[in-house]
Image (cartoon, rainbow, N blue to C red):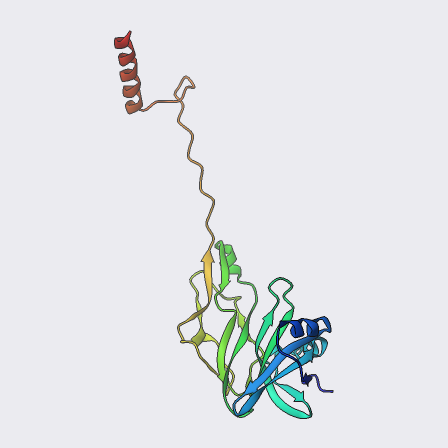
Length: 223
């Protein structure tokens, strides 16, 4: 069986108790919908889902979602996770037309080491971990790889500087920053110690001496 074929089962009951029972059986409740079709409540095997999405495209893999003998070309539209365990708790599958453009999020990966940035106490900051592209399901990129090895502390990599494959276009503005540089704060220098006089005692400013003399004079008057 091809790695992008995913067999789904129908007939699941909706509601929390039914969903919990499915998860205990290592199945994930889901729904598949799309233009011109009535949404279908389904469930998929957790292990089969993991295998189907194990390729380089990840969640953007175009699946042959098979439901009661009918095959729906589909992608993962939304994947809900448990807030603590982070396991997948529900999936929305979107049926797609392989020749019609859709908007998908594609992950961004940084490659290389920005030695010039590190030398000046800087840190490369990935502002956008994903980029949205408009493309047909057949030409969805696996990821965007950005080389940061030549970056300096003054550099900013924007959307317009990233190469996009043929048949794809970015949804973002060209001047939107994707990678920036943050300068780390240096340690605050300690204040210099008070200067010492020739006899080894700390020197006192004229203002401080005047205040001390006034205090002494006040003390004499009160006696």
